[in-house]
Amino acid sequence: MNRRARAFAALALSPLLSGCGGDPEPPVAATVPVVRTVAVRTETFTPLFESFGSISFLHKADIRPMAEGEIVTLLAEEADQVSRERPLARLDDAQLQIRLLQAHADLDSAEASLTLARGQLAEGERQIEARLLAVENARLDLSERERSVGRLQSDYQDTLRLYEAGGVPEDDLEEAENRLVTAQVALERAKNELALRLIGLRDVDMRRARIVPPVDPAARSAALVELNTATLRAQVEVAQAAVSVAEAEVIRVEQLIEEMVIRSPISGVVASRYVEVGERATPEAPLFTVIDASRVYADVQVSETELGTLSPGQSARVVVDSIGIEQVGEIVRISPILSAQTRSGRVRILIPEPDARLRPGMFATVRVETGEPRSVLAIDDSAIVELDDGTTVVFVVENGVVFQTPIESTHMGNGRAAINGGLSRGERVVAVPHSALRDGMRVEAVQ
Image 1 (cartoon, helix red, strand yellow):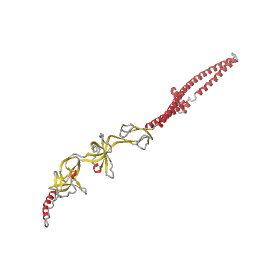
Image 2: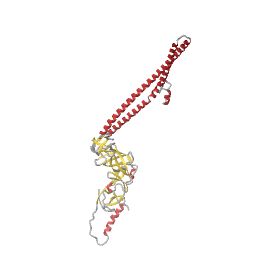
Image 3: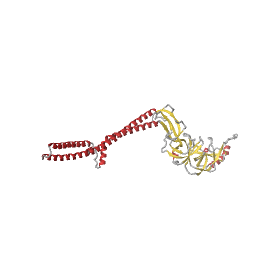
Image 4: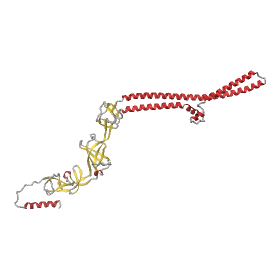
């Protein structure tokens, strides 16, 4: 039996039931409840996801010192706008400054040693070049003495023949012999001198040092200079290494001093300051928290049944009622996992140009259009009642009687619901049903 038939039946049975029985009882004035009704209307509906979330920051930095130290200066307070690399605090660096002075002194000493070693190498190279010239002079001297000995030998032989022929006295022969012997002794000395000067400059010396003796004279001279200054070159390398070590120590101490200046790694606003001057800072505890408020996002938890309607790139409206603003954002991230307890996943909506009044932690309403607009039947949300078994119903009013009618609906936002079945356009339903309403109850309907 439909609602209209049930209404007529109720009206027809009313007088019959009142005439049954014995003597009529005195009439009792019946109280008919008054209900306000609204009409089912056709409206344009855009499928909409709506949920609640909170505003959060895009970038956050908990700033800790790299080393321990006493705080001597604070350069920023909470709510200060700071740029990247701006100093926020300074730690005591007195001991490090002393270390830096010592490091510079060590560097100066190492550089002086390097200069000395280079000078000694240059002097050694000049000495080897001088030895090479001395060897050439010794060779020339040896050649001259060999020629002199040759001449004296010839003179001695001539004098000996003349003496044997009686042409010269014995004294002349002895004198010629003495000159020859003296020249021969000088020749042997020249040979020994040349051999002495050649020590370290011979082919065998180069081969021992694993150097192939060059044929070209200039290349040979360069190879001999390198061979005979190897120790001095090693001393230069040791001195250069000492300079490098000293330079590295200076850089290291300067870096430690720089680390005593606590800087912000990002641009933003100082959200928290946790320390005071005189306290000891350690790497384990943050000194400041800086957040980047130039771009914020809204975090919202979405049930698994609704996650499928959302995707990265969708536009979203973020409403913050506490300060009366609405911002346009974009879905940038959807969590790939769901919470085992709530069966929901986190969705992040980036707000690229946020209102300056937005603050992390503010409560927000997020709305995302998930489909194309279409015409639907619609009523007020307040007209819908959810029963204990989860069924949703409305109370339709016809001829002064209410009928409990099951429906399917979709929330439209702004206090309206789209009806997917169970009602017709123009029907009137109770706007705000009260708990005393029952199916078939007579009411007085007002608009």
